[in-house]
Length: 141
Image (cartoon, rainbow, N blue to C red; front, side, top):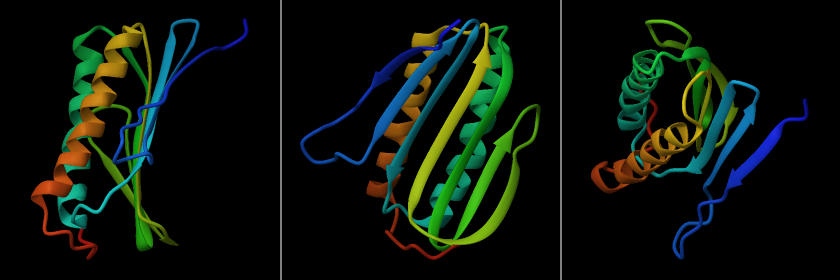
């Protein structure tokens, strides 16, 4: 069966760097986005650990099956990668040179539009972090 594609490109007058994508293949839904952020590294790190855990809980609370939930935060000089397939968030770090936040969810037996809403909420929360953080791009664990 050919994969059905349904892309939602979220653009507004001030921000054109964000894209939310939702795809479905049989019972599996894959949703993702990537956004440039000027929020402080420490704020993004704490947010991502908590958000991935909440996304995993949401999938399981809705009788879904987690295929994979992952995120990365690319800072100048390094990248932190976050992953959860069960209970705890795993963090891996490598050297790189960017400043982008990316999140992906792959889950089965959950509502496609609800995954879209979950990712839209996550995207908005990343954007809100910029308003509340000091803007420092210092990396923290």
